[in-house]
Image (cartoon, rainbow, N blue to C red; front, top):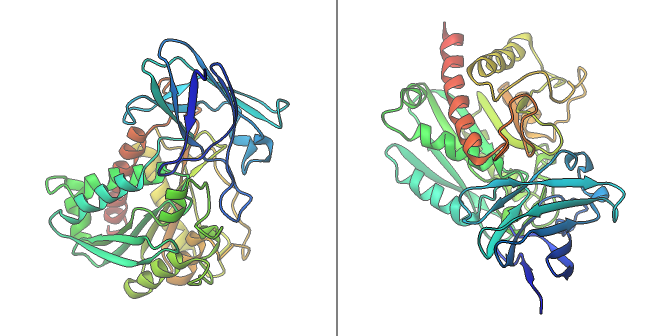
Amino acid sequence: MTAMFVDAAFDSGNIEVLAIADRTARLAIRRDQDSEFFQWFHFRVAASAGNEVVLKITGLNASAYPGGWPDYNACVSEDRDYWARAASSFDKDEEGGTLTIRHLPASDVFWVAYFAPFSMERHHDLVAEAAASEGVDYVRLGTTIDGQPIDCLELGEGNTQVWLYARQHPGETQAEWWIEGALECLTDPADPVARALRAKCRIHIVPNCNPDGSRRGHLRTNAVGSNLNREWAIPTPGKSPEVLAIRNRMDETGVDFAMDVHADEAIPAVFLAGFDGIPSWTEQQGEGYSLYQRILDRRTPDFQTKLGYPKARAGTANLSMSTNQLAERFGAVAMTLEMPYKDLADFPEPDQGWSPERCKLLGRECMAALAEWLETRAG
């Protein structure tokens, strides 16, 4: 009789079962629809408590970012609320690259994921709670290929147009946890940061740019295999309706400050990427970005500037990426925020690593940094 069962037929679930022998399972990650990308996994394990379970995810040398597996520990939960880390090891020579996850369950069922999931049900709860808050307007920007709404929340009475948007890449669930933290700050009528920002800004928030990929359990693409963060130059209704709807709203409102929230598989740090290399780059625009980076670096030890992406040379920016497109299109101070799947190399937390709780706290710190940035520039 099988001693263990593995299932993934649920919201954002992704795994294929190759074989189960006693309490060891051989598994593989399903590719995104019409795409070669794969890295996100999320599944449930049923096995009696008290004895170690061994999960082997194979074929990972062909995954989207093989550099993400060394020194990575998988996320596990027995209540789907608190996510800890399970001891994991990567062997590039075992079955095309294998991540071995070991876990001693305290109950008869537990969940395993690349990072703590942010379900579409939680997304709808987040939108409902925020939309019911005083001073928040809900805008339905459009519809995805699978027929899901593209949600936007707008608040504030000021003239500075701020855009915060997340999960262009659906497997980067850190981004919507960050949005939840930012929204908790911004919708709190007593929070001084929120009061300052609402007075100076009109803030537009898209908590999930890619609902279809999120529900389907994709790493990086939408329902037809489009990488949304390569669609911003010429979005189309058939390939990238999500980007088209969001960019159309931006054209209506304008954009002064924009943050595109992401996660990086390999780099064990929180960092920003800017818009170096856009054709219209100016010293003033570049200094706006650098000032925000300096403020955030001072505010929280969870942020740093040593690790990150190389800067593009003058005139070589990829305008199909949102940060570059918005900086060029609107003259905005735009940036991409990256968070890790691994723990922070220089500020680790052994039990949870980088976690939903830290994502949310960073969201609040980024809002506080924005308030200070506005005040500094005004001065």
